[in-house]
Image (cartoon, rainbow, N blue to C red; front, side, top):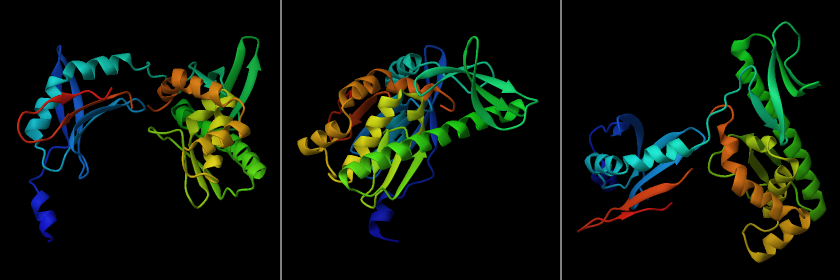
Length: 269
């Protein structure tokens, strides 16, 4: 075994620790990262999971002490997250920015479709109720991919670049990404936002096929492709986190540098 591997090899560690604050228990998942230089606490808004990253030479004991010290921060951040809105019969979900109520049409044939009645817009789901959440999620992913495919290829044609493939996932750290091979990947949750937001993200990632950077030239190109760029960026700043509360569920960071001598706390919030 290489010397480096032997150096960092350690006995089996717990996958999670428990933090108690004000009578409540919070599960904190431990994650060791070889490039980490500090202890870092993060809360994933999409999953409401608390993750503590350890540096290579960090100890579980120090990690536990760090998490305990910031129990109030954990509790406060979780409390401020938007209330989860699972896909369920009677619940409301936005589709292209327009509120729709989910209705289980148990005895009707088909899968999922949209409809309207005298009280508003509906997402109708056929079949048994236990399958409703999965079917709604699949439907929204299909709609997202369709809209993003159309928008991406439209923008690509305007600037003479080639989109190899468009995929949708449930990304939690970014709304979209672009590979040098022409593969674009987006969060399916963009279908919940108004169309001008989805269009902006499509234009943003397509522009990377011409400018793989965030230089002034890149932003000028995005602005030419999508005149509503600034409006969309503001919308995401204000409402973006809220999109993660729908269906299956990073809202700040606290970190402590690992160094010799006195250790101080940093808040990267």
